[in-house]
Image (cartoon, rainbow, N blue to C red):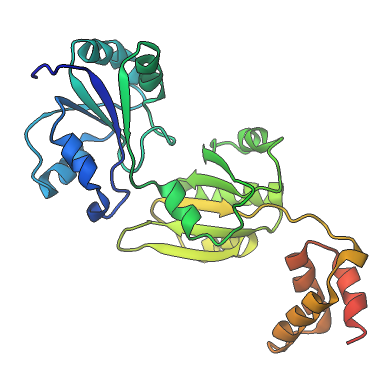
Length: 281
């Protein structure tokens, strides 16, 4: 590797699926560095081949080895080398290794440059349709065990949308734990984003659980759970809003009690209160 005038650690976002999502700046950086750290070297080599990147040393950098390689990489940076840190896909450090290395570089005064780009987190949020004006909570990958999931999610504000990544082999079991914690909340399922079998749908935790009973959901999954709506007092409920929802739902032929339950769920109030209002219609 050739030495450069100043050591720089680039944090480079890669495509999350579709290779065309790579930025021109990212390609420029990857063609200019002395060393590329990749969470999955095989995945990076596919990108390298697709864009005919210049020959450069590519070294594996995943969770189990990041600590033992940190000192060597810091020494490279001190010597003036330019290093690119990449995750397997998307933006590094979002549930990916590299935080300790970036922190160490910043503490030591080594220049750290972000090269922004794709992220499953922001991609899913952009199409979920939930109100994000008050913010959201990102918890990354949830633990395997039910008790650990409950502990991780305890104390989290319930009114904000919650975003999590779920491995397909744990999807069904994790859904059931989330249902126990949150009830039948609305969710946005964002699966295989930017890939051939991409799926984005709005549904509920309950309906999603029913779906997994008949179908094995595969691929990279991002799940967004809508925040809990504050319960409205009866005198605060808009009759006009209830009337509008009633007119929409009654066209489907369902009974008034079922309509009351659907409206109550939408407004975050009790079905009995809505049913009392609907009796006047």
